Image (cartoon, rainbow, N blue to C red; front, side):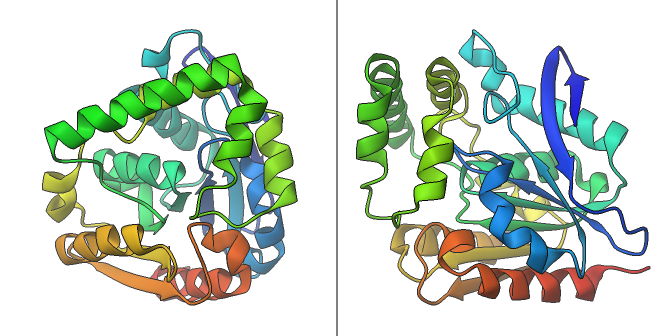
Length: 266
């Protein structure tokens, strides 16, 4: 379904509408779309109504010519409006990587919309100013590479140690609009997004943190998040890297089932 939200045509899909079950909104990562969750949907429908949303500039959702439109503030406003107007709330919110960063921003600013929050390979942002500036420079360089040689950028991206090879994901990535991907990096890269470290103790929404055992950087980050989010649990999934949803889909579905059923009241 395509709906107009704050001047942007957003694509989302409701994979089931069972009034006895809660909704689970799934947000994909950078270069992805709702299609990255296709292999999960069948495992999710027994205990929730999965809803996939193509984020700004990704998949079948329009982008914008200026990178400021991809900022955390703008995207949070888009998603809050879409969820309030199109979906049953409160819902459960799930995000992977970039989608997890956005889900955390959304949950902190609109806690009333959500019964629970699940973050796969997420982060609260970068605190150190020197490190932030270095990451902004890296994302700017990557943006230039995307605009100059998108296929070459994708070849380098898929060889990053945190990723395992996945042809279906690589196909989705190759179909993205390069200009919108460049703007996404500059407008909502890890170095640009607001750091939420100080706001983590204010998050009262029950939170499940998921990370792969081979993703050592994000294990450290999520151990910090576990300590600072009041009602949170950290699960480290064996045999997984950064993409737990493709490396260990059944293990992920089991964790989601347990988390949602425990907190959903009919």
